[in-house]
Length: 449
Image 1 (tube, one colour):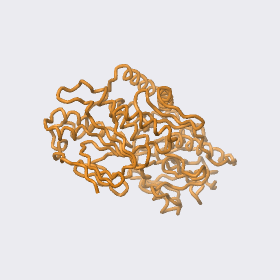
Image 2 (cartoon, rainbow, N blue to C red):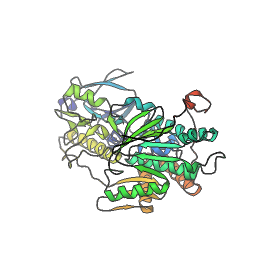
Image 3 (cartoon, helix red, strand yellow):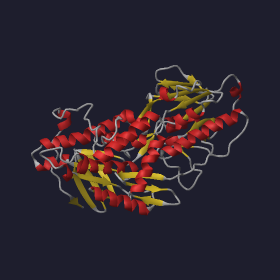
């Protein structure tokens, strides 16, 4: 470690208050360092449950914890609400949008990823993704306003466009969204309207590969597809979206092109790294992969810069297995804990073995009493998998009051089949506004080439 670590108290700067950054800060609570955590949001977001905000099960505050509240007992830690604009590894400074540069001895970058439209960024306004609270509220608005618009529409073709929901991407987020929307239409809102039958809604889940949940074993992928089908979801695999325009989704499946009229199109197909990955590459010469993630050393540092660490979804750790580690919360948590421990070891002149991710399994929920779990040594699905999913998500919520509120809300929803947070809020919350009605959906038919 560099000499200036022996002068005064070492300064550790952490960029990003997600799982990686927050776990690093928490594990440095009693370390002889000064910690500065920088984030452009003042809260930590429990992203695995973001889809439940988007589908009216939970409210935003149920899955978000103010960073200052979480870290208020950490007397060595300061939280800054600001946006990082640049990093200067030579002068060892972090440049901010609204604050003077912050010097560091050790830098931890954990700024995650955002949506990736594979060169079609114009789709972002038509097909929003799900990474932030604002995304979730916008998706919630679109889902529930679609039913309200259908209730007022007398033309059957236009009504069906409002009652057609297209989710693009068959990973965990896409599967969870599709299952949740199906439960809204076929259970939670059944009987709430007088002019429409919500169970007639069409929910389409489109995946480009040959099966859903590609990282999971094929048996669990097949089980997830069967469960979704039972819920009323139409699954289309080996189907590529070639265009989204005028509320029309064009899908290529084999040699056939299909056009689907839908007023609610949701994106769950890909991610790209935050721009700090490219900034680090410009200043340090480190390598980034095709989606902008930084290739890190076995100790999660950048090659040639042992005092700069990249963790979480922004990091590509290629040293374990034939694929990079998955972009899931447990990876970021373990990486944050490892870096915090490594920092403390280095201050004592000691070292740590290379980072090794302990995979305790992966879970995906399809609907109530329906989930799939892969523990490596065992795979199972159904009610037991759902219970394990519930337990894991309650366990990893940051604050006790969040755990309690979510547990009570889930318990109430389980027995009442209700979704108490299905509020239509934000810009365009009133259906009479022009931006909600937009242009009339086109009448389309499938075309074959």
